[in-house]
Image 1 (cartoon, rainbow, N blue to C red):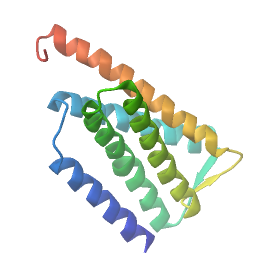
Image 2: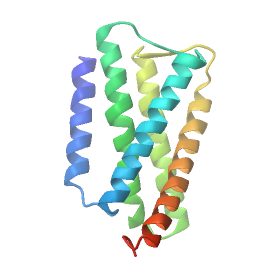
Image 3: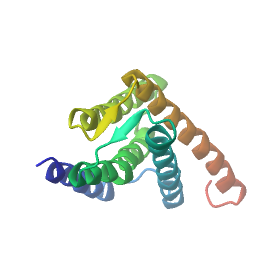
Length: 157
């Protein structure tokens, strides 16, 4: 039941991403996706392999759920965020939008904990919330650098 629900959510997220009007250039979308895949897989691997503060369930279904979450749901939620962010003009509305997506992402991680896909071992939930904010900040900085590079190469105006 959980596996079908998570696969349905991933498919709906992918379909909605591909039919939504993109606000960023194709190269920016590809760059953000690559950065997010790198950061997310590194973030998860450091927490459950290196630091051993998370454990991932050994059964097949929860393991697949975690991999779908890590490779599809997590990055595409943030990719949708970056494509929808240019709609907002004021800084306040951008902060609200960012807070909403950090909350959605933290909620999705909490969902994994409730389903016993991820088990925290001495890991407080608020640290995940702070790491979500750091990941968004790193992607924003990388995107600013990449946009500057695209302007220098005269690919983007």
